[in-house]
Image (cartoon, rainbow, N blue to C red; front, side, top):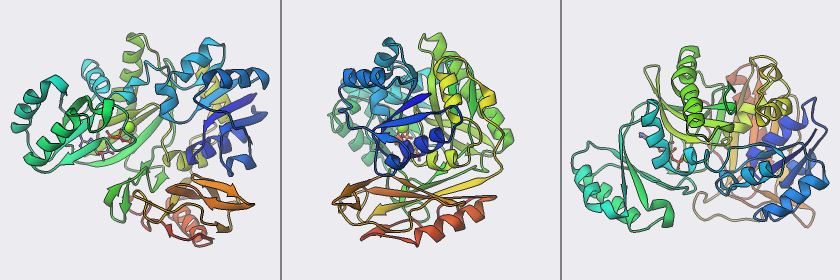
Length: 421
Ligand SMILES: Nc1ncnc2c1ncn2[C@@H]1O[C@H](COP(=O)(O)OP(=O)(O)OP(=O)(O)O)[C@@H](O)[C@H]1O
Ligand SMILES: [Mg+2]
């Protein structure tokens, strides 16, 4: 089949890598893609905000499956439009995407369907006083979340009442525009985080290897939040007992509930978990693959990924498309530009060994070609991924390769995967 991927980051490179290897895949296109993706797929420059142009392209290239990477396209209803034009799409409808695009929607949904999550309350602009009253009676720390998509910048963990009240005021005053017109105030959960991706066809699902990412910029999980500085899979924290519970108490009721709400979920349901004493609660839903977890998870996927996503997209999940539970491990270390997640330089030349070998794959996130050179073009530049029989070997493979790649201002964390219990 012919497959179109929408997006341009490391996650989309990993999707392209896994789809292209699939037996049932003939050709992969990516809009707009990046220099790494262009080595395995045909990258096409179409304005992604013009959905009708994307639909014309699908017709021209006889696309059988569209896979949507970033959440914004889902929030904008791209899957609905493609589906209405007759295309098989791996990605939820705009309404089902509310599980990610509205934290208030997600929390109300979890409450209704009795899915374990932190205790919460929701306030809108007109309820500032009630919000402050509510805060006065809560323990610290307390978690404040803007309702809408905020590019990973909408969550504050407040450690004092003053801070909590200030953030509440700022948010409801519109600090994040329409994203913070409503806020969720949430109990702080103790524990360790991990995530599970479920490939869903509207009713049935299959999970991929559990992963753990490293959100903070500094070693030992310190400093500012980022889009993710690295990830590894499988995450032992999600042992088989925890995974069974995640399936029966979280994923299964989520799919049943969202179907009952008449918005069946087709796509990748990402459940962000807080795990303590082998009990998992939902921190958040995302409605697409995570970045950089996908780079680790898909590096150890065994089977026909194209067949799996296509079968989900047409509402007939083929679990046999997954060959076996992989007994390998992968570790993805992000090479970032110095200064990220604040201001950083772009346009620095990247040199060294970026080639695929038996134990390493280098995914491109923020790179571009400039005068025949590969240069940096984003905060997160490359996802250097080691793949081996166990996690320690995969970590060693990744870091060995990290040393073989250079660019001015190269920054990375040295502890990816190393906190594994
Ligand atoms: N109730 C909670 N208790 C403890 N920590 C929390 C809680 N809610 C959120 N966090 C922390 O804040 C981070 C961001 O929260 P959340 O995942 O809801 O926001 P997001 O902006 O949607 O994130 P992402 O960009 O990963 O999609 C979580 O990964 C977690 O570390
Ligand atoms: Mg999120």
